[in-house]
Image 1 (cartoon, rainbow, N blue to C red):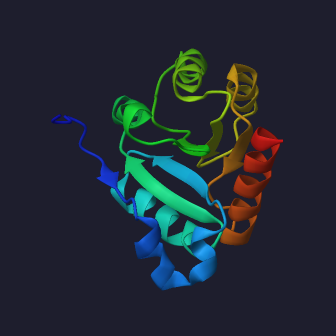
Image 2 (image 1 turned 30 degrees about the vertical axis):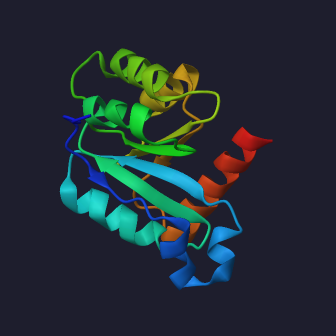
Image 3 (image 1 turned 180 degrees about the vertical axis):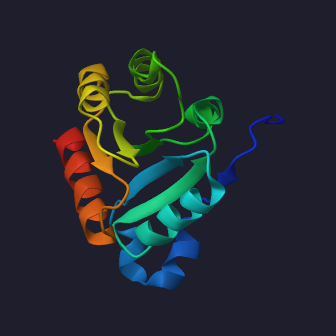
Length: 155
């Protein structure tokens, strides 16, 4: 079947992961999808998260439409969603729809924003996002938040 989704897909088999050590196949990693319209931000986030042995970035997407293509191809635990994908006065409602489309009982949404916006924060959390974080959060803090959200989803 030909897929029309144009996303960066990184999936390694267990044998490929074994080159990283025998424990990498015994432990379930947190599967992450990054959705951001800036390629350099997607790449930087993926690089930051790759420093954690507990997280595997399965794919990145430039927009919600492409990220929805992943629903049939991969199973994610956490989706990092850019807080600036949508502009305009109705952003909160649009983000609410996006979060409801992307999130499931097994998938948590974390919205990453360039700057704090209390109204946006309230709207995305009300819509089902698990966290609203600033993009300037250091790598250790971001990894800790992803691990916490994944733990809350599974427990």
